[in-house]
Amino acid sequence: MFSLSRQLRREEKVIGLVPTMGALHEGHLSLIKKARQMCDVVIVSIFVNPAQFNERSDFENYPRDLTADTSILANLHVDYVFAPAPDEIYPENFSTYVTVDDLSIKLEGASRPGHFRGVSTVVTILFNTVRPDFGFFGQKDAQQVAIIQRLTRDLGFETEIVVMPIVREENGLAMSSRNDLLTPEQRSAAAVMHQSLEEGRGLAESGESNASEIAEIVRGTIEKEPQAAIDYVAVVDNETLEPIDRLSGSVALVAVAVRFGNVRLIDNIVLGDSD
Ligand code: PAF
Image (tube, rainbow, N blue to C red; front, side):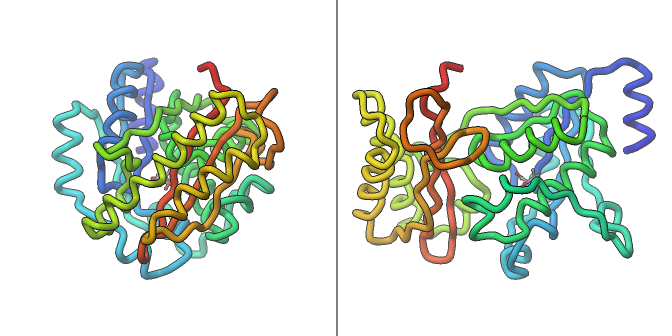
């Protein structure tokens, strides 16, 4: 990958990297299609990153199907699939980690200690290896996006981060590789996350600017679903992830994390962003 990337840069090709952990779904496809439009060469990495899992069982149960993934990628005219072995990313005695302080301990970070250190570290390694002009990420992982944008700026990467909107199933559930771990009943119950966020949006659009009122309606809607157990409902600044009191003046991220049985899902909407 080092020599390929060096060669591509010598040829002045615009390189797009779509980092994934495989188990590709429509959400990934929208990133890849965007990369295909913007770049001369599209590279998709597939690496189930052990460093970002808190629980061994979660890592082991993470869906993996490289054959199915590569055939999807061939149909999308992806140029290269980078699927390194774990010891290529983490050689023996690996001991250098990247932590984006502060942003990493909030929201998801509170429930998943070390998760974002794993994400930041692997994304840094991928960016250093592939040296892409553009890196493509999904808005579904809004905190991951904020962290990667911050690390790209702080560490001086030339890579520009492109964020694509959430792609949803027919019932509104945000596409995620974890959705396959839900029972059919849980899958339909999980639509409540999107419904609740849309209710929050409706309230904001009707003029409510008090963040706790927005959070309250979101929470109340989710609580009506007996299969849902709320981890958090948060209204925060989209960039700093600091809680906000009022919507006016900042772009607000309304983020939720909810468990359905053993499966923990996240979803979000952004309010006050004209783009
Ligand atoms: O979003 C993901 O799939 C992962 O967190 C990423 C960015 C590929 C890093 O492992």
